Image (cartoon, rainbow, N blue to C red; front, side):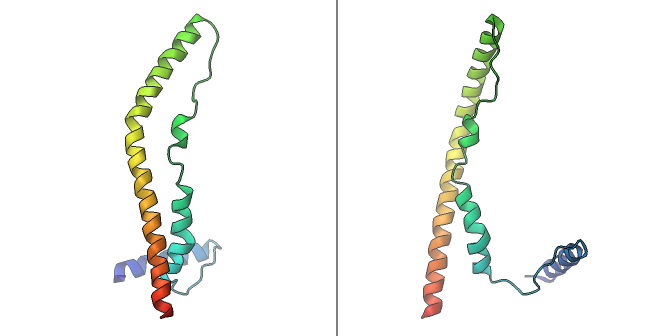
Amino acid sequence: MDEKAEKLLDKVNTVLSDEGIPLTTDKADQFEMIEKYALPALHNLKEIQSGLYNEFFIRSKGPFGKLKAMIIRKIANVSRNTVELSLMRQQKFNDNVASILEYLIEENKRLKDK
């Protein structure tokens, strides 16, 4: 890391320790950090599209309520169709990144053992 990044990290550590959040002063291994934080985060992003299909409108009764629900449902479908492709691409990217990271970590461990 460059000098500015080191200074910023030292300042962040100082502020956090002043707030009562103790941090380890050891320099963490990058692969350990990837295994501990990045991979679980990527695995938790498996269902990136799940929020897209949640119902967000409470149906009301009466003719105007049915009309309102129908219009909102049409708008929701158009919005979902518009956003769905980009979310599918993002999901595929997330899956590929997770697979590559897992492979590289295993390969790194194997090479370290040699």
